[in-house]
Length: 406
Image 1 (tube, rainbow, N blue to C red):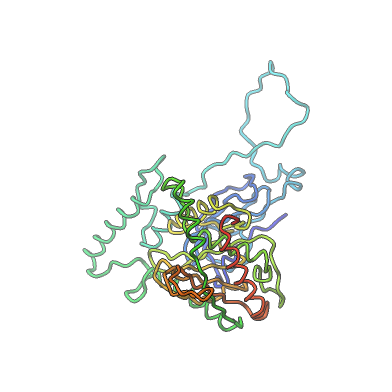
Image 2: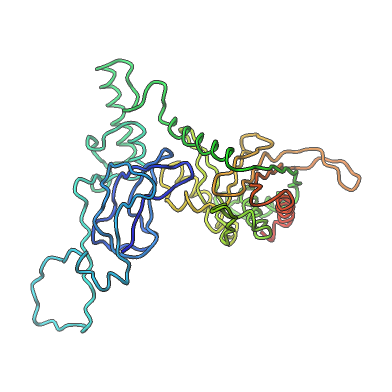
């Protein structure tokens, strides 16, 4: 018997609200299936299960807020369920026997449970549900216009507009969602969560910082020539080269790719880069782009675009919030030349990327203008030292100068 627990979706998370079960007792689930929706201070997340098995009865009901690590439900592994399926699976309704049809096999498989809608469950996409929470809209009062009556974002926006008009009629000036004061906006909860995380990071992690300037002329020239062969939709952004070069450098200096846990460095083999994404309503989330080291540039471009879209639509999975082995923050598109980040525990490093701009550059006694980038590294001094950090930045630069090999 296994336990499905309230996951920790970041060092700043202490509790989570179970919004909805998307499976029913007796339903077979596979590793990676979405089984629940959980709300934290950073938004609404789809929670995956990390083992194959059959779900048991829920121990926590929708609407409850519980601490991280609380058992939400039990589930049986496939080995256990092969022996005791009849204890968990809802038997199908009796079917009239057809005596003329012989049995196809002497070996009978366990019956597959019929998945029925959870009593009282409202058909609503995670994106619309998140918007409803932000706007203080009760889903029970919303008429869905999607397939089979599912509630869409447009329905939430329309309901919020009606609700605002009614509130203004009853009490002028009251247009904020429930449990939100005039001094507290919907994004303030996330700001508090970010403040708690970075405060803990600065207090517990002895940071050291390194900075280097990189000549981007060669990689950008290669990228421009490569993009000329492609359609607009297939073109690759410069940040994709940077992400791939980070992964290559981590392969050379693996001590920066991992976690500080149990008072020791625990390096990770897989490279999952947390990519910082600014949200439209304020706040910041750094979900993981998985297996960056093994992706080609086209695949990485698609993965990054998909992740940014789903982050801003509120459709992230729990694994994307917990798997990051290092974080990259890119503020170059905002005109920032240099960014020094704060490490997100339990990670041990963060890479900051600034704006690519033309600057004076001296080489071989000649002075000219080159397109340059300032890259920084914030690293945990308990796990590495400045020498390791310098090796990483050198490897990062070296790989960028050979873009055809990325």
